[in-house]
Length: 304
Image (cartoon, rainbow, N blue to C red; front, side, top):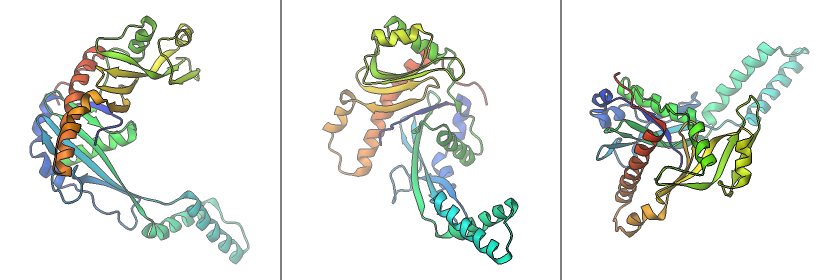
């Protein structure tokens, strides 16, 4: 269950009261099947899968949540074909073209006809809350998906003042300085990929993979005024990820130095294995987030 992409949010200490009885509150907003005329639904499910009624798994100050979803699969080609057939039949019957307004009405009729027969694709999106330090992490690099997760959490709790993590120090400027000076903060090492952007509108974008990032080639791009928008990093030889200029972590991976504890363990159930993995990941990320908070200045919101 290790996260692969991480979007960061923060919430104030005063919001902790809203997290009381979190499990029962989520239990009142569970995932239900898609209705005949619904394109998608979202609701909470157990992080441990079917058969479990635990909706907010606790491990120390951390609360692991999973948002489930169902999305109807209606390929555009199928919809367009059905509309074309209706248009052709109507034009043949009355010997005049179908207007744009009529086509819109026909499309609505086609969707109403097709949706009850469409297959529903399930999805799962996990996140967790750190009640001590006010971090909320969502396992997605998609802004839309992450915001949906937070929105559904607010809905379950009545309200919840979580906001995107905002850096006081420009991540682009800080990461660009790291590459220019070839000096990274203690504990960090360069990965092998980055993205450089010209700050001008519609400026050039350079993406590098499997590249030595402290090379003269990269420095030439920086001398020309490009800034770092994504940077591959290794932290304490325990995790690697690509950090972007919104503080989103992509391609997150715990390395052998961190996971060897899990591999040596002897757990007799899937739930015990998932619990151990979550405990390890949340503990490792806590150290990284403390450092990122200091490096970029990511204050915890105050008040409501």
